[in-house]
Image 1 (cartoon, one colour):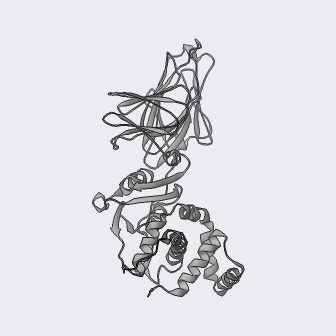
Image 2 (spheres, rainbow, N blue to C red):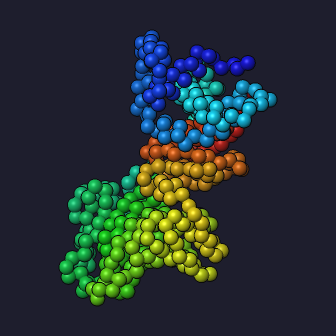
Image 3 (tube, rainbow, N blue to C red):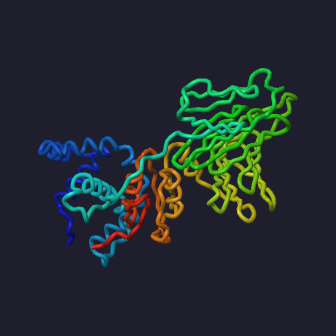
Length: 396
């Protein structure tokens, strides 16, 4: 026999169906009566409505098999179910989400030891647009603190900032000016977007930097990247009307393009440099050879070069404001959270073999992200002393 409170389950089910807009006429009457019975009920629904989009995005990406396994374990570990259990799992996932939200939000004080997704301890705000600009002379500018408009003028190039975007505009006589080099760096918990002198766009992820000339001269356009960035490269010709290839130095390799969209991950604490191509064509070169990519492929540079198909939506989720995990190992997920929230991880508490599937806004607090991960698995996350600690949930 289940030891859940049937009344709570019933109301959680109504909440979940209300969030999805699937209440029947009879259920709507019951739901409205419940809302009117207590002002706290209405306040709860209003809070849930405010985060409705994230809840539904998470629900659509929920690992229903894990959710169902969790429900089965709680009901009775020895129960066996027929072959159509996968269809039942989808319905149970709805109930599990609604029940979890209901218990966590509505009754945290009544049953603190039974919360499905109560991340305890400290919390951390999400990252934001912030970066440092280092000029040729060593001067450092804090970009988020600068007012809109002209930022600097150096060697025939005007730097301007508009709506958080840093842009480089060569002046008409810039060809005779000496070439200077600038570096834009984002800290842990930072991100920034800039437009290079050739009008190519760069999105920098957290804990990343890019070094580039204020004017592209010679036979190529070459920049150096550490960390992660998304590039939207324009076709560009020199004053002699020769097309100039665009080259990115990242780790032990170089990515060469003429005009394309691609993402490079080259963090120093990662074993490999990964280049993922969205549009156009790129050539990835390492110490042991080179490979050409077509859209949808990713080159992994580590003791040679390997090429594989990749989920581009997952690769570029960070640029579009999301964490997207498709059956991703927990260790890799925690690295992303470390860079975005500036928090550590007790590595000894990371259980092996744990994978998660979820899509969560990067604008949420750390506890909100961890709460979503809790709902889709059997782990509990705690934040103490700026460290994430992971434990197994107790099964009763």
